[in-house]
Image (cartoon, rainbow, N blue to C red; front, side):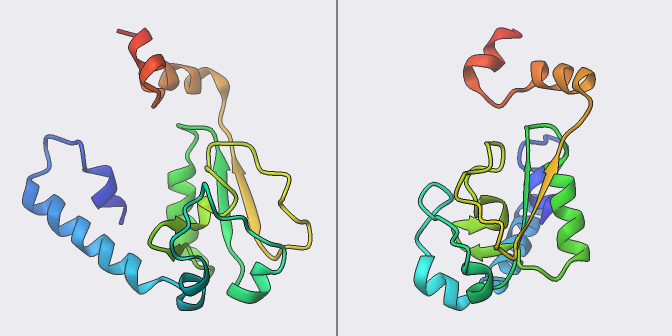
Length: 147
């Protein structure tokens, strides 16, 4: 999973290795979908899906990772996938980090305290974070400022 995503833009990874890792990642991802959830919400993305307080009871609990870019949300996701039984992939268009909207955005007011979900908020020291954000902010307008 991580190898396929992390290697997409690396010149030192040969295309065959990348294709194999991506294929393995897709196969693992498809096997993890919740069939009931897909029937009811399968076409929705994080922009359209609204997690209800009873969805934990209906579909199972989730661990949603929240945090600003370059804070380690991807690393925390890998650790939770390897060490927790909660589902990460809910449908082809929605994973646990998107259950409450974009993972780098604010937690919506619709988050219910009665939910069985866990929300993990990741942050890091501002000094090294600012250097990394200046290098790559993942925003075209901001990224062009450093050049």
